[in-house]
Length: 306
Image (cartoon, rainbow, N blue to C red; front, side):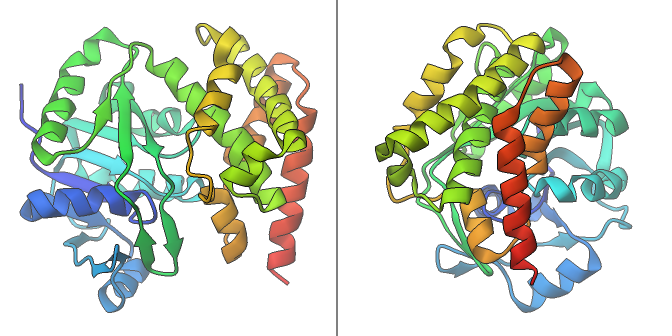
């Protein structure tokens, strides 16, 4: 079993900076951050500040060929995924493992179309929300990286990543059914991220508002119906599990989408409501709540551009 040594991180925003910082502490000589020329200039002049400390990384541009990654961690926003897939080419080898920490249920398929399913492990982030303000990221280190595979042939790669995370001190979980777990996280994001972004609610305000939680459950039921149609196992209790998960969040915490709205940044509504609407069309399942949320979030973003 080949040990994971060289790591490439794509995206050092709210989530990517958490893991880049952890890896940098342990093995800085083996870490690279993939950037384009614009971001190279930006980060060189104004490094990311993580919990009050500047992070100075070794950056690589897409055209460089001297670094080959054993592990790639993708933590960009969804609208940056296609660029990352294109820019990764010089850094991926036959036994490279790729983890995509993007919210949603489609990024792995997009990456696999270019680099093959054998290199992809399903993965996602759970934990307290990181707060990103400009170049500053603040996080309380409550985080877990969930990963795994639905293919028994990928168990070697699962074990390789597990050993690396043990070495670095990265908290992780390997669920028995990674696809169901991924859809559970997706249900949480589609409901809580979008609704709080529209209403401007913290998690506490969301949980204490009966009308808001009723709306959230209706959004969850649309995701539940899509998940069932997509062949996800044991969908019957997904809504109840997601509501229970919301209740564990820090009351004053804000979803990443609400933070994007407040900062005037483009949201990931296409990955949430947009994807659910597309799946609804595919399976003939009505998705009225997600359609309304998408229209509202598109309108909010349009207003921010004025």
